Amino acid sequence: MSTADRIVRHFQEELEQLKTRILEMGGLAEEEVRIAIKGLVERDGALIDRALAGDEPVNALHIEIDGRCFTLLALYQPMAADLRAIVAAVKINTDLERVGDLAVNIAEAAQRYAQRPPVKKLIDIPRMAGIAQSMLRDALDAFVRRDTGLAQHVLDEDDKLDELKTQIFRELLTYMLQDPSTIEPALDLILISRHLERIGDHATNIAEDVIFIVSARDVRHHADLQGG
Amino acid sequence: MSTADRIVRHFQEELEQLKTRILEMGGLAEEEVRIAIKGLVERDGALIDRALAGDEPVNALHIEIDGRCFTLLALYQPMAADLRAIVAAVKINTDLERVGDLAVNIAEAAQRYAQRPPVKKLIDIPRMAGIAQSMLRDALDAFVRRDTGLAQHVLDEDDKLDELKTQIFRELLTYMLQDPSTIEPALDLILISRHLERIGDHATNIAEDVIFIVSARDVRHHADLQGG
Image (cartoon, rainbow over all chains, first blue to last red; front, side, top):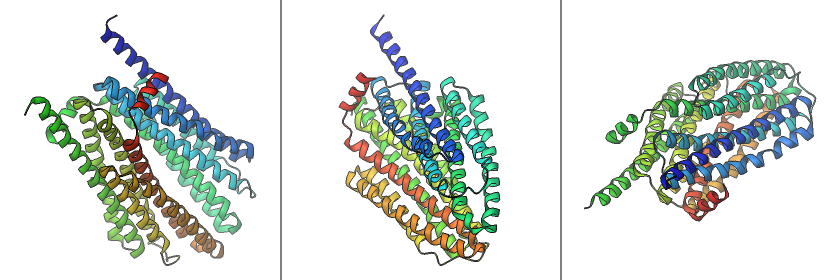
């Protein structure tokens, strides 16, 4: 094999590893969200603690993936589709790190919520969490498989999260207005629903990046340069 | 001048233009926040509408800057400090776009808030906004001047936002518990304080990127490659 061929092959292996690490990070972040919501619903302090501790490996992967992207750009100077994939990976990495932070925010609110009598049986929040988690999973699958159809599906799902968030808000407002003792715990549930909505936003960002990297034509960048 | 010199010079000009555009985008996003908060405080529907409309130029710049970063990476294949600066620009661009979105969220809450009697005289929220705006400005100055001292100052300021947010929350909770008619407008103020906190988070992200691009040594990436 020629040196050039070996470099290309090594680059492709590194790029595959990068994608694998991103999937891994996505899996960890999603699990962190799942455990935080389970801890909320089951009022289980140990689960909540696990969600809080789960952010550390996500942060470690964030730094590692950032380094990998930078190394790939610096050493291989990739072009076109590969370059777009790596720039997208830099962004996706940031999105996933924020998802981990949001899982921590959810767990913190769950911790406060567990210290008071429950406001109501939680149905819509686990539903929101389920949608946000599949959006995240689908967005990452779409990235790895370069599947714009799946990415578009993620964008469509975002409306459901929005509707549920509004519905949760209205319902909890009713509780708060009727019984002021529910104000504090209800506020935590409202915050959690907003954290879940933001997790959906991050999945949406990833899906948009996928659509960009797959559909962008190189001509665009030459046009940019001439215009700049 | 040789062809190589001309390419280097053209690259440096493009990089300067990129930084200028980022400062411009930061200025627009900051102005959007300023107007949204002014609209909130003065209960001025026209100002709130201006903040809502202000997100369009921010979004247009977001796409343009993304294109510029991509072009610089693809055409010049920069190394070391320049590469780090461009990768940071990709992230900063994302942060600024979100700041614009948060200004819209603030304006939407201000719009609802203006339709009801005010809960209280707003003092801490404009103070939070002022801090968040200077953090953003300082973080971008730190990026352009590669000033890690200023970047560190941004990180330190974030605690102030956190304290004010907690204080605002406690005060509004008291209002809500005493008078349920304040629940809805007070919730909007709580949300606005959280949007401002997140603007501070984005300034913090930018400051962290600055510290990374200035202090990272290239050796790190070789270590990464060998480890990977």
